[in-house]
Image (cartoon, rainbow, N blue to C red; front, side, top):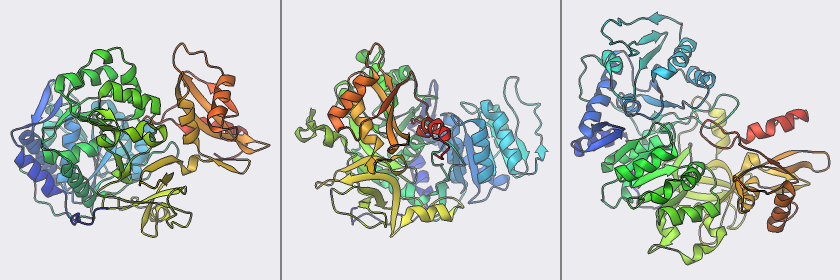
Length: 549
């Protein structure tokens, strides 16, 4: 980590105020035919903040936003933060039952929601409080609007639509459009996203004001001064929302899509002259396969970031050809967003051509090197650094590392040892400082006494022509304890068989690592954030064996 970086231990609120003041006349957010300037978003989010405080919302209180991507959802999140509160993003792709559990577990004081999620929001609020319903006069609301605000116990429900409408306006009332003066410290929580997980209540990750100050500083440091247009297609409840928030300082124009449909993404890139976007690999594959891609103009793109899951190397090379020298790899996680490691465009290309050293597939698998904010090490089971080239758990230090898990010191202690944050990922660093993520620690397969990393097997399978997606898990074996199993989705028209896949795999990575069995499927199960759900794939194998997953 750069020794000359400043002290980030301060509030993020002055950064927001400066962004709104500096770029007041510029367009800040666009969603279809709706748009807000920085001045308009400043006023709307300030009114949300003042309305919250009018209702007794205090610094440190939690406010949830249960919504698909929209301008108003972003304004609501900003209003929570500007009131001194903690923004709790709620993923609409989760089941209502899961979101009700999350909200009641965290105890949100206020919940903004789109009409589509009204029932789940009301159930969550009832679970939070004493089920006291406070009706609001609906007489002034035009037909067709969800024009109400309910206060149930300690939780207030505020309906929002895709753009400010009477439903939100009724709640806001006649409040000041000037942001309130609120004191926040660097270690105070600003946002409370949740870790992934398909069973149990996800853990709330306390991202602090200092985390966002550091992330914004790092983003501005690499900015070249040219206007930026960021496409928000991935859910803003996750990395997309954090990236949007920290980019306001450079006057970014946010182009918001309600959902990451390939056709909409392609159309928006060309129409809005998008310069920056982030998508997970599966969404990128959908773009590469879309029939409109060959005729889409990608010349405006400057940074096309990919992450959240390993990317197929053949597909990455295809992305180079289609989108140009703009691909940006990296490694981050909810507990330490965005800046653990990055592979910049210059690491992929030099003067528009693939850099000579990166013609090797192994080098392309790297997630990059540590960043201006991070210090990265590979550590052993005792959280002590190991020599380069040795496999172990990836650990990180830096000002973007979160403060821990909300009201969960036991789980926080498990990932904080010897001054390091332990990522839960197995990796290795080579002699040049390139970092490789091999697998999730929990996904490692122990077969016949050998450690097999599912991520390595998956990469080998994805190098086989005809395989579109692959997931590798360990399943019970009387002989080996566990054996390697692959679940594979083929490209349409491909005639690969289980035997062919196993034989090709053995040629590439040997018999120990290769799958013993292969299931060919039409679709792989996914978590609410779009990752392949390995827990679901493993469950019936281990449950049938009478063993826990």
